[in-house]
Image (cartoon, rainbow, N blue to C red):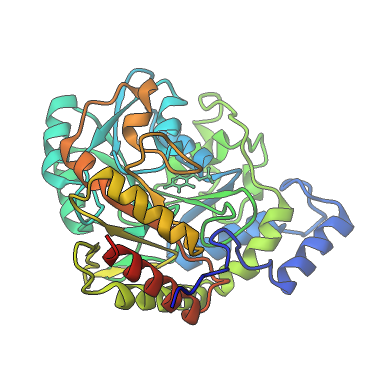
Length: 395
Ligand SMILES: *Cc1c(COP(=O)(O)O)cnc(C)c1O
């Protein structure tokens, strides 16, 4: 009757053997730095950039040290100035406003809908209020907004869109990969994302000048000609004295373990979505529990699952979470008074002096979140859903 789940919500799969072999090969030859190459050798980082450019269908790709570095590098490439307002989602992870703050710029948060995406009407008002020229759009927990509507609004207002694709590597809107709607797409290859190198990031763009700026920013010295998915030398010529080196390269060891993982990402996405659909079906129709609708245009990656407990008083949510935890189901709550683990919300980022956002507050007050690592089976997910279902109904 009272089944217990015994899996770990934070245990990812091991690194595949092929990736381990590639990493060992790099360690055996010792050329870990991306520009430390034998004659005729492209190196693993350059190969990864080519692979990822092909995967997303983009012209230019740069691998960097982390997802947060990718975001800050994108802002620098767009020449965001200290004090400048940069718009971003109120529902996002702390490194996103942190990347904005790292340039001395000012994050201005935009409201969140019940679908967990950016509120386009509020975005329009924020653009008018702030005259911002950059939106850092965070596809938080993999939820994509109506991308054509967002791009029409931003293009019309002259706002450049940087996409934070930390949770949408492998996702698309109506077939166009996430990261290719805006002017720059940024990804993370940190352990909890879709491919795992511990830390790491990727930047994609079709804009030759932005790509050249990003390469120089990342610390290319005079080796920008050793890239495989960067613009031609002409794009760099007039930028050389102008762009500072804000070192944040990726190394061959990490790139070596990412390439085999990227090759099998489509398979992994199918597995994630299988897990996601089991949880979704298992939680359908629970009174008082709202599922997040997924639009048909959204090709998502179900690497995490969210649901809402709208209008539940905080003590009732706390009791529900405690009962689930007692049965091994570790849920995160975006409405908690204090930040816990990786989970904080915009109102906790007091350094950014955020305005209150009533719609976001209402959504996050009842928002529950869990990871779905690929070490879970569909049977595990069915059990997790049964436990949540029983405890949500147990008042
Ligand atoms: C993880 C994450 C980042 C930052 O990536 P790191 O590689 O950890 O720096 C940015 N945005 C979101 C939404 C994330 O979850």
